[in-house]
Every structure is written in C-alpha cells, then in structure tokens.
Image (cartoon, rainbow over the protein chains, first blue to last red):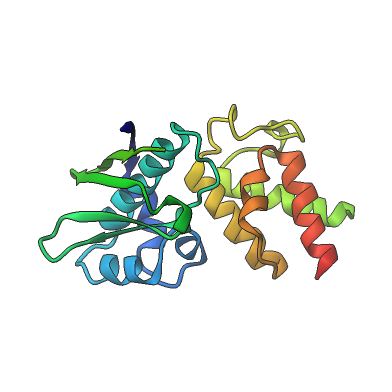
Length: 121
Length: 81
C-alpha cells in the first residue's frame, strides 16, 4: 500500500471578490456546479469556497507526490455526504483504484485541508 | 503577436497579480514570483478567456509557467479563433 499526503491553507478573504456571483468565470475554473450550489446555499459562500479550494490543492499535492501530475481543479470534486463528511470524487477513471481521505476546517480567516491518498499503484 | 495584444496581455497580468509592469518580463515565473500563486493563475486564465473570447485546454493552462509562455499561448488561441 502506497500512502501519500497533501495539505493546503488559504486566506478566506481571497474569495470575497467571487462570493457574490455563482457564475463568476474564475469560480467556473475551479468548481463543479454541484460544489457551487452547495457553497452558495450557505449564508456566506466564501469559507466554503476557500476550504474546497484548499482541498483541491491538497489533493493535487498528494497526487503529485505519487507522480500523478496530469490533474486539474475541475478533475476533482469535494462534496459532503449525508453525514456531513466531505468526500473527494475524481473525474478521471484512471484514478479509480485510489482511495482518498480528506479533512477540511476553517476559522474566522483561514481555511485548511488535509488529504491522504491510498493505493497499490 | 501584435504590440497592442502584448500590451493587453501584460496589463491584465499585472492587474490580476497587483504588481507594476516594470516587475514583469518574459522570464517572470510561476515558481519564483511570489504574487503568482494557483488562485491568481486561475484568475488570469479566466480574465484572458473573457478578454479575448477564447477557451484554453487544460494542458495549456498548466503550461503557462512563465510570462513569455503566457504571451505565446494566448496569442496561439487568438490566431486560431
């Protein structure tokens, strides 16, 4: 079993300029419609956007650590399950054998994500 | 690649990154220029797409590793329109 990890932290205020327009072109470069619908259903979208961005960065770092570099933000979806636990969904079939564990958190001004990738590759 | 296009490409680059044009040349690199991080990179991509009515392939977005490459790639898409 090969285990790699990735982590990322981002300032929430960097998302203020996007958080009033669900159709902002920059958001469309990072997030799926399902992710945007989730974030914009909240009272304030920016911490939810920021923590998902950090989650995608952390996922990319964990994949880079195992030599997988052909991956982009829109290849990764981070959605909460019914129990509220976030899950990483990869849109590339070649990565279907990998398992992802992700933890997201944020405080007043920062959002942080930690990702573990497990697989026999 | 026209002088006018290059000027617009540089103006957008500097506005998004919040830097002066004198700080940027073709060798300005994603890996070594502190204001240029992944979130700014995505903003740059969407600003160029909006300004020039183009849509980049993922491989080209990743290939924009310095300002010279940004100019080359943006110009290629403008010419192919």
